[in-house]
Length: 158
Image (cartoon, rainbow, N blue to C red; front, side, top):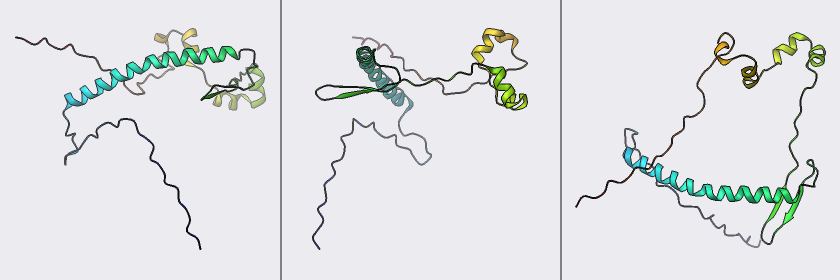
């Protein structure tokens, strides 16, 4: 039996990896809080720099979409460059119930009301939020936002 040739797999090049946070026996970070805050701030600054690329990306995306404005929304489109191709997907579809009464009659009112939902935004346009406490529950959900704020360096004293 002849030996089977195997291909050497190259490891993908990784971007700069952050230093791992080392934990001591008590599971507390060995790095001080100020160092963590400073590293977070530096990464936040770098992320802000990337936002310029995001703006240019969005400008180019809109330009490419404008080239294909004649294509029906349900049809895809493709365009080739020298090193890249772009694929423009069909538009997503939206379905809207146009006759709630007919739907309630079809399902039966008990089934209809057990599945019916009402958006808070729509409710706010009909009933003031201060008057909704008897039928709306309010609670805090979702993540909190952590924002890095650069500090001004104190001038060196001679």
